[in-house]
Length: 420
Image (cartoon, rainbow, N blue to C red):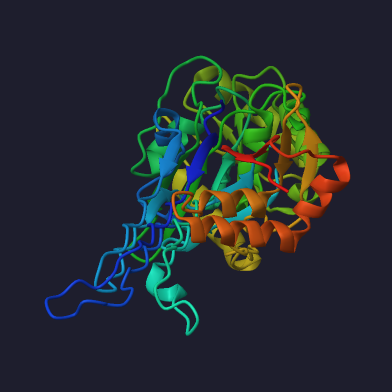
């Protein structure tokens, strides 16, 4: 699992059970039904937290379950609702269904919330089933099951400036030099395995959010190395600082290689302003080559900034240039989204099949949920479920399939005996 992706399982809370209960008081020999409804199950809610900048917490915990609703009580008391489960994620997190990859939510702003799964509704108590013809119903509903699904979280950083470059070009050193971030720094490729964010205070009025994005290698557009993760983050930046290694045999070739990968992944990435900076000019061997390198970039009409992230030379000029580009670009418009809450399939379609042991199985999402909400110990609840089978056409389909009296019918986890 890469640093900016996580696969987790979500389950909203089950609704509390409604109950069968009758009023029992002295001098009231025939108290009416007063069984209360169950409480609603807790929702699964995602919220953007400004203090998070990676999905690493989701590697330790992959299962998230909201609280169930409480059962109803006598005297028409409704059970307490289950607490919502609020899951904190960093800005730039996309939530996709797994495995089909459908985009469910795109969280881009601090404090933004989206309710992804609704908790099950509470079951109705017998007081809700009283009618003029049936004044003492012995039936109730169990709580509606919660919703469950696997989702994939993808983090796409949101920053003013993204620092790109080949592995070991000095991106993390540059970020540490100009911001309060403390990324891992070492002299070998792919030191940075997760993106780092930092805030650069250029002066009293100017601050920039910078992202040190993991290094790129040839073939990144097709997923080689850290390619997809690198390129996803580039999409969420407004201006790029293209940092080149002054010790490289051919900085111009490095520059061309990275831009080729950007174009292959998404041609629109080349439209982002780029500030090209040659790093490590504090080294004598780099300074000796600097006129030659500047001439190569000048021939291609590319302005080249000379900096040393380690010695902190030329960095303020580079940041001021980035601010000027940001002013021209303007704010990034991201189609954020509280997309619709994930809908549980309420399709009333069903399928009848024969099991290897000769029994029958009826499958259908709405039907199986109704079976879970049925109190099988109360005859009236069972008869209500039978009426549902008739209404949906299940009885007719079983008869047409050739079911015989005494045979077993499976619906979800329940076994029923067929009687004509």
